[in-house]
Length: 171
Image (cartoon, rainbow, N blue to C red; front, top):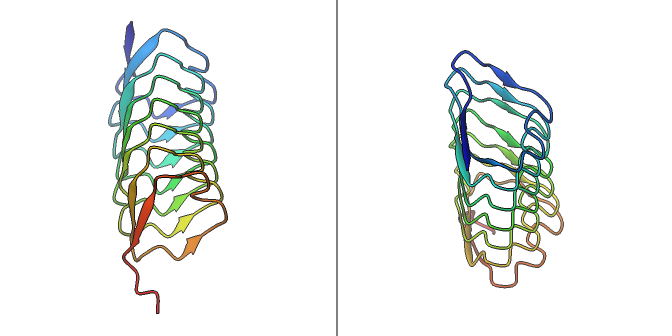
């Protein structure tokens, strides 16, 4: 088991920086961090949980794609977009806490997160792109805030146990 603390002062974690690291179990980010580039932690199969600090405003694509042991994620208030395949294939992911300023969830962001059972969609969220939650078979309830103006195709395809509550007036 290996824990790593990104040093204070680091502002960017580069593309594929920790990709396929099989021993990393936890990572702590400093409040100086602003950007995590694409595929930075992709296929880190032992990583279990982390918190993205509020200082982070930019996330690349597929950062945690196929992190099979990932169970819990907290996304800070600085993040406005969850990119393509951000948590795709994270089969052990159970709980996600999304920050208050999230506006867009891109396609396949949580694709095949089959154990995802708890996630909040914050007020202010506007767009949920194609297949964002496809095959999230453990999702049983989701509340869509009235700020959402676009839900694309197949967003909830394969979510066979899901009940959706819309806060918007659908008249």
